[in-house]
Image (tube, rainbow, N blue to C red; front, side, top):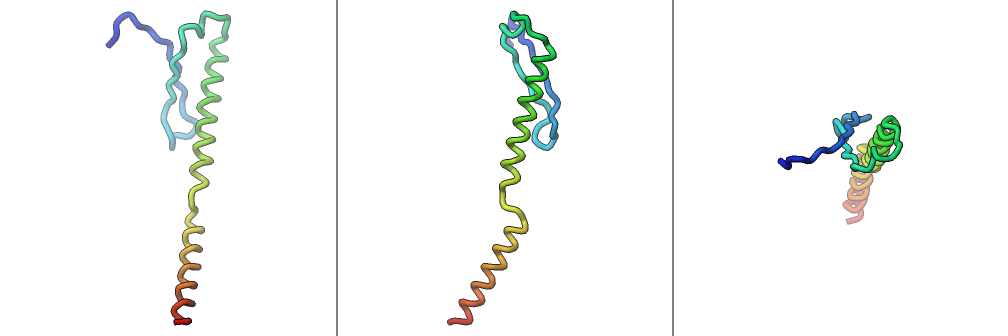
Length: 87
């Protein structure tokens, strides 16, 4: 543990608990030196967490669907059957 250090932290609840529970943002010390509204900082943290969830769910959806796997197996079986008939 480091003594004498203090950090300001924002915890944001996940919009989709399937990916993560909370997002923890560690703020720079200069964040509150400016005339910044704390609600604006919180909104920005929530937007970043939402964008992360959106991009990762899109990546998850682009994987092979069960229908694609079954149809590929059926086409492979048909082609194998035709090959057996020709031989």
